[in-house]
Image (cartoon, rainbow, N blue to C red; front, side, top):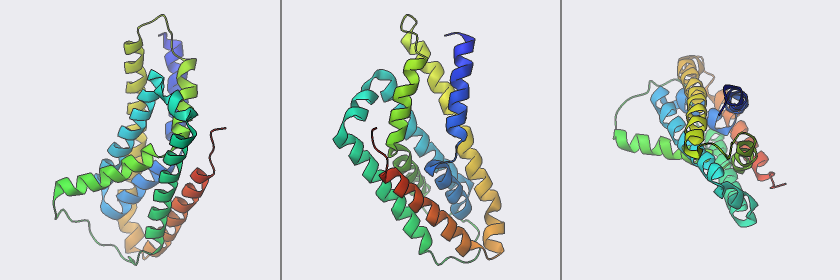
Length: 209
């Protein structure tokens, strides 16, 4: 892999990861409502799912999944339903003031809940499968070592994706006191709830074409 090819790939991934989406919205929301650690756990779950999609696409299995109408629709409707659920949950929240995030309870349970939430949102976007399936063939050199290329591609993607998701989680946690302390909790819940429902509706409209 030449430096020029890597730079083009890195630029494409930078544009992809920097663009706000359901995962970044979820990480920011977790940061606001549950603190930076919750947002970081959520980011790790989303990163795991999207990295798995990237790996499948690299090995060629992504093409099989993308071409399967049944699998594509299962992924799409599962993701859409979960995003709408998150939206309804936010819209019906009665929280109207800031309450400091406590560290009580089982840390493993907290990690699992946030991680799974991030994983579901990250894994349920079929557009990621289509994107990676179309992206990788443009950069892969069949005459070079495939493992080395994969490691470079994966390391670049993981670094940029995790950096952005953690940034959203951090910004959310830093704005938590202002959002809840200034009495804007209901407005925040309405905005994020509408964002999740809108993302779910948009995801439901996606097709393989």
